[in-house]
Image 1 (cartoon, rainbow, N blue to C red):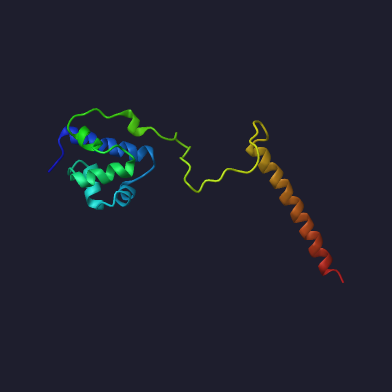
Image 2: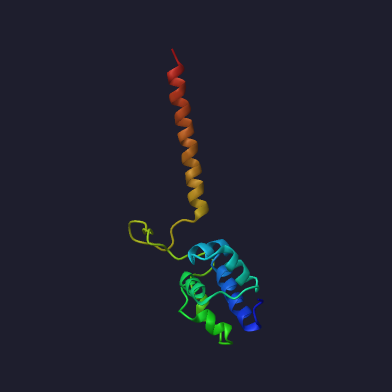
Length: 138
């Protein structure tokens, strides 16, 4: 049964969250331990998920319990649902390890680092050719 307009707002809010966080239907189905068809139908406005599925979707998105139902009943869509890391600054997972040593402002640019690395590679190549030349000499 197709969704009513408020239910559609809820599925659109979930789709907005997925887009903002670079996720897709497959990710949501796996994270929510839900049927991929159910998730696809929900996001396409074709079906309204059962309460248990709503709870699993909310859990996967980190939303408070009952959020999807409240939106589906005409409630507001809190902007806080979409808070999170800025584009290009993904949240760090539990495996993140900061680089050793103190942080310094300034320093050299990425282009300058690449230039230094390119120079070093040229020197290594020259040294390798010299060593190979000595090995071949009688």
